Picture 1 (cartoon, rainbow, N blue to C red):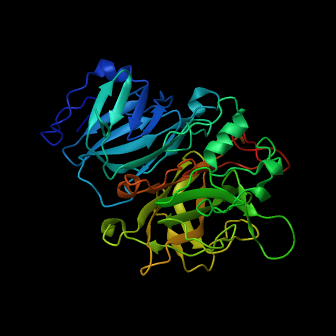
Picture 2: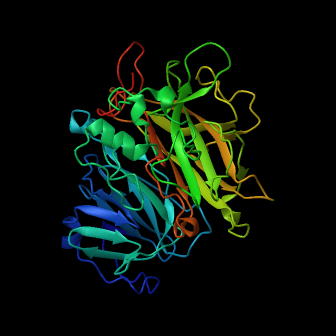
Length: 422
C-alpha cells in the first residue's frame, strides 16, 4: 500500500479514463468540486499521513483505494441509492482551526462514501465525477457547506437573490425555502421563528416556498418546543437542538422531512403529520418501487464526542432534551463506532402516503470539550439518490444540512456569527 500526494494513475486499468495528475498540480489545487458541490481545500494543522497535505490518495487496488480531502467547509457525502461501481472511495475531512495554539485544532469525523469514477484537474480545481459536459452522475451524492455555515445560493438550479442583502438575511434565505409575507415585517436579523414553516416540504398560499419542489423534497432542520403551555408543538430553529449538561453524553435532535412526488392538493397543516420512514438495509437499496431514496448522515467534532452511542426515531418532539431521550423507545439503534447512517425510502400510493416526517435523536459519549459557541460541534445532512436529482428532485438544497453547537449554561448567543441563536 502506498500513501502519497494525490497522483491518479489508471488503478491497474480500473479507471482507464483518468489521466495521471502531477503532484505539483495537486499541491496548487485550491478547491475541489464533487458533482455540483465546490469547497476550498484546507491545509490540516495536525499530523496526517502526508504532512500538510490537504489531499491524499491511498492506493490499495481497484475497489479499495481511498481519496481523503480536507475542506475548509463541511463536505457530507453518501450513496443514498443503488451503489455504483466507481473504484475509489471518498473520505471528507475537516479541522476546526479556530482554537489556539494550532495543535489544539479539532478534527472532524465524516462518513466514507463510494463510487468516485472520474477525476481530473483544471485551473486549480480538482474535479470528481465531472466531465467536459458537467456532472457525471453516479451513486455518489454530496452536500457542501462553507466554513461559516453558508450556502452559495441554497438553490440547486442556481437562482440568486439580491446581492445587497445583509449576511443574516442572505444566509437564512439560502437555508430556508420560504418567502415571508411582506405584511409580516419579518426580519432575519431578529427572526420570529413562530412564523417560519416547520415542514419545508409543505407549502401553502399563506406560507409559500421560494422554490416549488414538485418532484421530490428532502430536508433536515433544527426545531425546538414552541413556547407556551399545553401540548408540545414544534417550532423551527436555525440550529440543531443540543444538550451536554450531564457532562457524560452529548445529545442532539433534529427533524427530517421527505416527500416523493408533488405536494398533494388540498388543506395542509403548517407542520404536516409525522410518520416514521420505511427503513432500508444499505445492501438492499433499490429503485424498483419508484419512490425517493435518501440517506441521513452526521459528522462530528472527534475531540468532543466519540463514535459510540445510540440514536432513535421519534414521532413527536420531547418537551426537554437530555441523554435519556431514547430510553424505552423501540426505534432505538446503535451507532456502532462512527457516523450516523439511516437509509430509507418514501413511496407514493399504494406503497405509502408519499411523505415522511419524524425526529432523530442522537446520544454520543462525551470525551472532550469544545470551548466556544460559534463553531459547530456536530452536523447532520440528508442526501437524495442521483436518479431523483436528475429529474428535478430536491431542487432546494439549502435545507439539506444543519448544525448543532455547544450551548451556554446561562443566557448567551450561540451559532455561526451571522445567526447567534438566543
